[in-house]
Structures are given as structure tokens and as C-alpha cells.
Image (cartoon, rainbow, N blue to C red; front, side, top):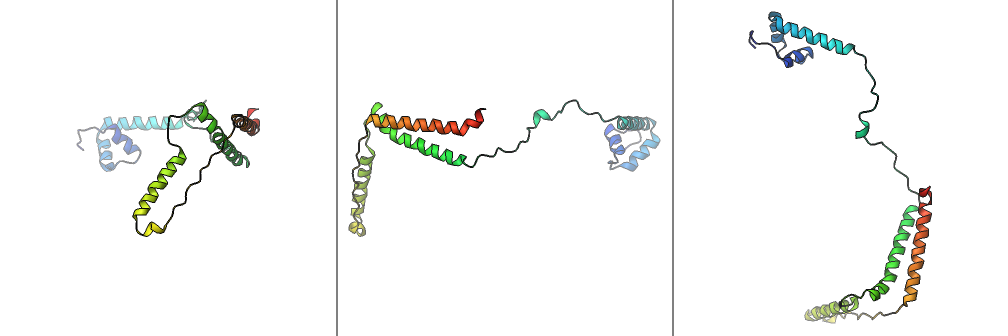
Length: 179
């Protein structure tokens, strides 16, 4: 640092905070430069005036909009997982029961039935096995044909019963939540 240069505000602040690396040079400059000494005195007066001000409490929290309130997690009742499982099982049963009725109402385009797909896969598998010399002793069992008919009245009544059970179950589950 040259004697003709003045100290910067950063250097003066570092000197006051006792964080300046060139402390001896700054002190030497302050002895020889009245202008920098006056600026240092003004900064010291400003900082001591700031320190003497009382701490004021804020009228509202500035952090409140940015922080979420910490709340304890809600403890679920012990029977809740069982109820959810039962509802899922009932919904699956309702879908299985209503599927044939829905297929009758909304027929799908001609697509192979699941049984025919299995039979085709079985014939291809057995043809492949017949080509293998060691597998000629293995015989694949034949799939039995499963066909049963349910009346539309039975399907509709089953769907109504399952829907009513679902509504009652939800009503019991949520009765304390509605209040």
C-alpha cells in the first residue's frame, strides 16, 4: 500500500472486525493519513451507536409465511388397514361379478377368449416339446373347459348388495370425520 492511497471501506471494516491480514500497514497508514483516521472514527461511532440501540421485538413473524407448522402425524385407528383391505376385496369381487354383465351390455369386438388363447399356447408348447427328444415322455395335461352361466338378475342384485356394503363401510369409517 502506498502512502498516497486511501484505505477502502472494506479494509476499514476488516480492521474494526480484527480480520485484516495487513493490520500493521493499515495502522501505519492511519497514523499518517488524517482523512482515513476520520473515516475510521466515524465508522467506530456508527457501530457503537448501533450497538447502543435497544432490541425491538417484531410485531409479526417474518418467517411464518415460509415455514409450515409442525404437527404430529395423525395416528390411524388399528382397524383401518383391515377396512381398506376388505373394501379392496369387495371392490374386486364386484368387478368380477359385474364383468360378464358388462360384457353382455357392451360386447367387445371378436377377440379370442382366454380359454382359446390358453389352448393355442398349449398346442404350441406341446408341438415344441414333441420336437425335443428327451421331452417326448412328458405329456401336458389338457385344460378342462369351464363354463357356467349366471343370470342378469343375480349379477345386478350382487352388484347392488356389494355397493350397499361399500357405502355402509365408508359411512362407518368416516362417521367421526364428518362432524
